[in-house]
Image (tube, rainbow, N blue to C red):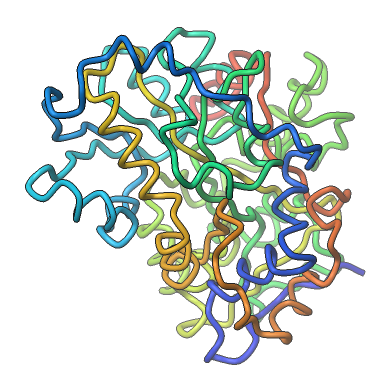
Length: 382
């Protein structure tokens, strides 16, 4: 029987949850994201840096494409101190698919924040270039497994920064799922009007794949995609809505408008004191993401971009990320001694191989993403 977690004591935060994930085994779980084979460092591309104007001749004022919330100053305090008056400008998005689409549509900046499942797509579209890792003072301390997931053809196109779980969240006072399964997202017969879907074809189609028993939900066959599409369309008439706003979804959940949703642990943290929310472990396994920074090809702020990202992946920023967002950090030098044993046990973080197990599925590149996108649009239009 798969068990959910309905919140250890109120004094424990989501930060303890993901802290625990990387504390067990001295960071073993973080390495498990990509498989720690020691292949993290690919060397520096100093030739590219040598061709650039010195940092003093760059315009500064970085243009950054990112999720809302990641503009929080404590995450880049080091950069702010070194370059006072050079405050970046952010453009926000709600999903990786939206960020890539926006850039393919003409947006250009200096730094983007793709998750590893999308790095290959950014590279294939010739939108980004490799980092000069010799310019990153924190690079030697970044988790090798996560670094590997940011590489394409042996080059470091993404500097990992944050990671976390994706799962089902439901109201334990309203929902009796029995054995928890991703199929709960489609049970509109028993919970009409109380289910909401995240408007993201990459994640949601994969969730549908787990629900129909696809061999590999991240790379489904045409028949499997058709089965997932049919499952969504059958449930859709009694699903409340498709959400794009995380805060909006949290408000709907806390107010009782919805009882079942796709969620990150931060969502559970936001609503758990308002309603009895369970952050579950579906029998098919949780999903997980790991994200980082990429540098736009042709940026005029080459050295500023490196300085900003180096600040973001510092131990100090990682500590703040854990305490305030509860996302895992890629920096292995963060102090993780204050970990709640109760919370580690509640989230099964005592298992050092969790992210390599069948309990967790790290989102990955999908060469057939266009088919998933098409099916998702047809689901929404149905």
